[in-house]
Length: 145
Image (cartoon, rainbow, N blue to C red; front, side, top):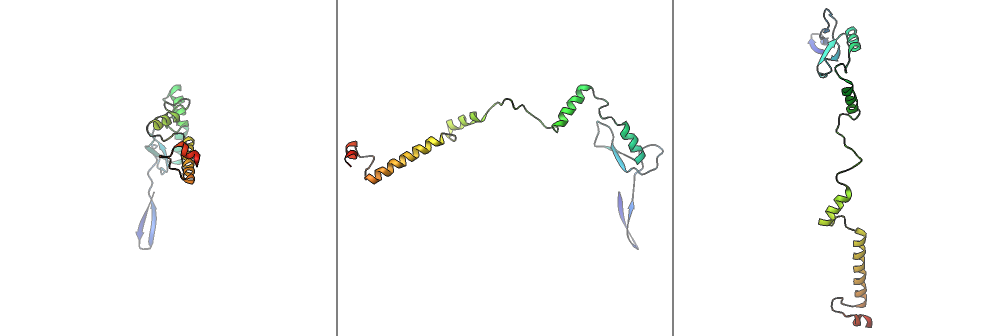
């Protein structure tokens, strides 16, 4: 860590180091290491020589049995996020379509509805060309025209 100090001849950087956490070591503790496998967010500061010793003796899985290690590897491979099985689903898209089509007709047969609309407009256009009123005309009148 450094701190800027203003003086008569400009600013200087003055470095402050904490000492190594190893007993009888006065070297600066530059390198940080986790305190324990259970407490990874709290760090201990060591010098270069002692951080190497600490890393060689570090064993994350020291207090775990085989099942715990396998579970940890499995959760680590998926990033500790929840997962679910893709082989089955409780509700599918077809079920949603049935629900919405029965109440709101969102997913109705669009092809058939377009055909019905087109047939109605074709018949209405034919009636206009023949000058027939489709509500009051009878089949005999239509045949005559």
